[in-house]
Length: 177
Image 1 (cartoon, rainbow, N blue to C red):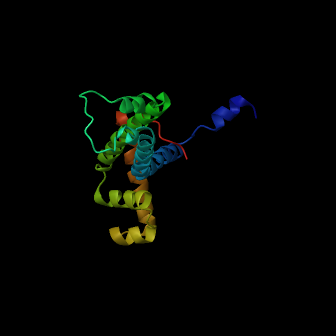
Image 2 (tube, rainbow, N blue to C red; image 1 turned 135 degrees about the horizontal axis):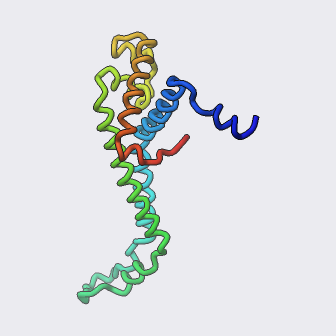
Image 3 (cartoon, rainbow, N blue to C red; image 1 turned 180 degrees about the vertical axis):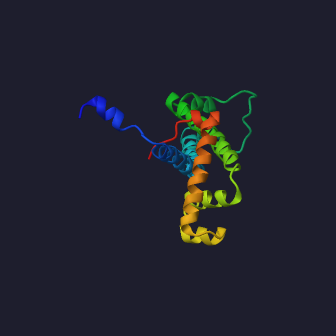
């Protein structure tokens, strides 16, 4: 096969294959939603570690017990602030922007999840966010596991349409696994 035929054979030929591609994208978004809080906490820890390492003003503290205020910034504090590498401040700023963007995208995903009815929401959140098994989910919503999987498929299709219309979600580049 040549490159021309490979390109056309890899395209989805039917609506079912196209729906599978959309469902896979929705699943990636749901996994991102599940892991967003962990990513934010990790970034906050990195920021705190960098601030503790580089913004420590312990050397600027006089421990002789006598007041030394001059009404201006002390030389020790100036030295600490001026000696921080530019890469550290850029890293801290970048991580803060990433956290803000992650929180914004997570809030948009939560808004779109509200469009699902109770059964669809219980199945999608239970399976993709909480990692529950079909048997437990089916007992909760009083459907068979097979029916639950088909309800889940409908819910993923609805979410795919909603996510495609939402500008924040559709423009965001979600990490691929």
